[in-house]
Each structure stands twice: as structure tokens, then as C-alpha cells.
Length: 175
Image (cartoon, rainbow, N blue to C red; front, top):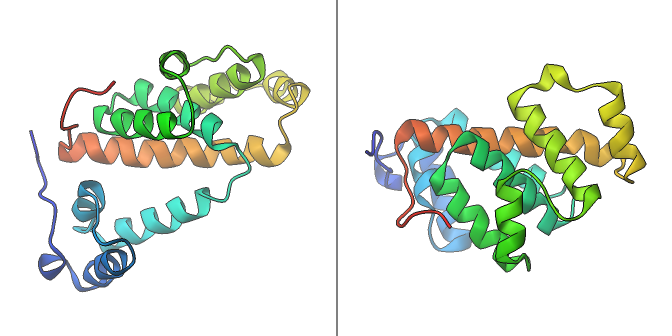
């Protein structure tokens, strides 16, 4: 059930209105989540800035989508799962890759190690050890990627929790 309505720019607070109008000018429209975030100018600005920054991470797009799928499966956001499954397909992932990612793993041991740590960053960050970080390094992940995985998890938590709170649901069941 929808708990907060998406806002038209005309109905949004002044700062949100300007942000929405800028997005519409550049892209032609805003998504349902962004239009709903417009209730809070601070949240909307923070999300847009954070999302833009996370597009510059060094993680390959396909791996980033695998991490997002694993994290969103844990969070339980069908709206995000649907969006990330679509993005994963666009990044060249197979249905098998997507299913494994949603289970928190991959056929590639290097990716599986990173996905596993990402889920732990979300679910039990205090359990991460020196050995876990050493294992990521042994798999060839740079310190930059290890640091950026926290940002990717945090962005997914932000969007997933927001969508669940406001009641955004996929148009059809998540694949």
C-alpha cells in the first residue's frame, strides 16, 4: 500500500521543486522514487549527490548490479530488485547470474567473496575481520573497491528502506 504520494514539481517544497525541474529538463521525467523523495529536500539532494558519486566507483557495472541484487534481496525491496534485475540484464548478466546474485553469491570466487562481504556490511558489519579484508585483497580487489563497497551498500539501503517505508511496489512481481 502506498503511504506517501509522489509529488509533481509544482506541489514540492521549493528546493525539491528546483531539483525535480532540473532532472526533468535533463532526462524528460523523474522516477516514482525520486518524485516521492521530493517530500524532503534534504533527502532528495542527499540521494542525488550520493547516487551521482557512486556512479564513479571502480567496480565493473555487472559486479555492482550483483552486489545490489544481493543487498536488495536481503532488504526485501521488490521495487529495487526489479530495477536492479533490469539493470543487470542490460549489463549482460544471465538469469542464472541474477539468481545467484540474489542468493548472495556468484560462480566467480572473486565476485562471490566481494558479494558476501557486501551482505555482511549490511547485515552484520561488526563481524567483518582483518581476514575478510585480506581475502578480498587476495582476490585482487583494491582498497578503493573495498572502501567503495560500503558506499554501494549504503546507497542500496537508502533506496530499499525508503521504498519499503513509503510503500513503493513494483508494477509486477520482481524477477
